[in-house]
Image 1 (cartoon, rainbow, N blue to C red):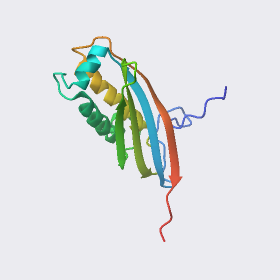
Image 2: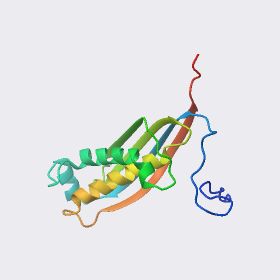
Image 3: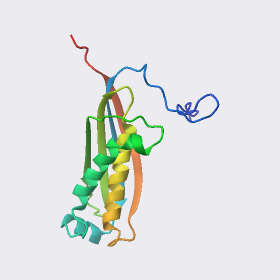
Amino acid sequence: MNPPAQLSHLDARGEARMVDVSAKPIQLRVAVACGEIRVQAATLELIETNAVAKGNVLATARLAGIMAAKKTGDLIPLCHPLPITHCEVTFDIPASRDRICITASARIAAQTGVEMEALTAVSVAALTIYDMCKAADKTMEISGVRLVSKTKTPLPVAV
């Protein structure tokens, strides 16, 4: 097992700090995160037939996830406030029909990555599904929220 990397959000005294990214180059950065919410088959039927009293669950969860990604810097104290250029939240219902799998991607041209934005989008989308369906399903469980990938690509040099 590799030793843990130095924690970038701690200074030499162990105090929390915001990382200074001002010397880093601006690059195209993309992050993808995923997670799931386990639901009963009856709950999934309510969602798919748009019969949940609070409205269209997946449309609302998609918007909530995108809005949350845009507000990540306001929610997580040491996160940089980022003007993300794209965010997408998608849902997949596997053949087992016992969960909704959530995937979010976030993109930006910046000096720091957008993995927290993608993770926040997944988390808030799952929480929104939970909130909208909690009256119908007391057994829902959110799990597996994780970063799938993050990439950075140098931007082309303007001529």
